[in-house]
Length: 371
Image 1: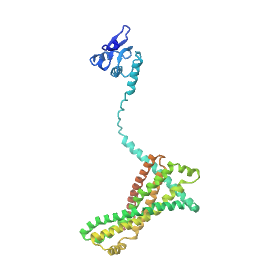
Image 2: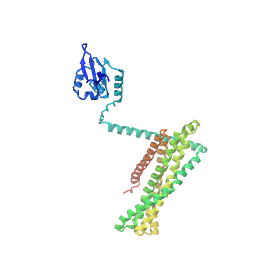
Image 3: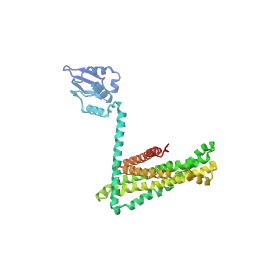
Image 4: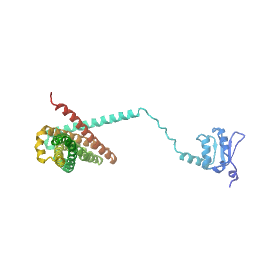
């Protein structure tokens, strides 16, 4: 072993002012010479340093690096192995964490960005609505261009295929609503009023709303996924290259299919909900089927059915617009398509509920009896 390296660590100043280190500047050598660090700090990093005769390990190199304030002296004599040790040391050091700056206006900016994003989406939906209107006018002038096959296929997938799930949900909701209402009406001996409650609430509100929510989750998401997949596979670009309108061939049949199908599904769902409510009223209140059916047309006016049908058509239009919009604007990636499908379902269900609330307020004002 080199006797210079085996000796204790030393620091001395030469006659020309050079700081010379010698001996073992390692963890073992510095353990009993902690005072040397103060001596190193007392010397300026701008001075001339000679460490070529010192033995360095990672600990000694780190100590010198820290005492030199994180940089090598400009006038440094060191071996290539020592310089490599410092280069590795610098590369291994993680950058200091950036302090978190708290911005008091961050929540306000987030709200602003969300509002701008919402306005942008609303603008794009309105543009799609305009293109659908232009496509409808084109079909009025050129009936032979009607995409009948696409329209019938979408009617089948959105309507006929949804009969089972809407029937099940409608039947169960009718049973639940009837059971809950029967317990309250029985306390006042108003058993027969269960017909009024079920008839108006189901035909006017629950039937259309349930059908719309189920269609939004089932058909709306399917529309978004289908259009997004076509965009991902560049099929929409192929249609444009062939001179075919994606709005006319894809978005229009899907939206019109929901516009036609959802009122029929609302009637179907309402009918099954009334059947479930009638069964529960018979079991819970002893109300016969004949009494229920006899009172129903006398207390439930036809206007409630028309209101439900009109709302269902509006819901179908909303779901079709939202589903097609998010599908046509989905990012061309699997992750982007998944996010677009989720947003389409959430947006469609939310807009359906908001529209239902607006319709309820509007009809309560317009149909209010005059004094």
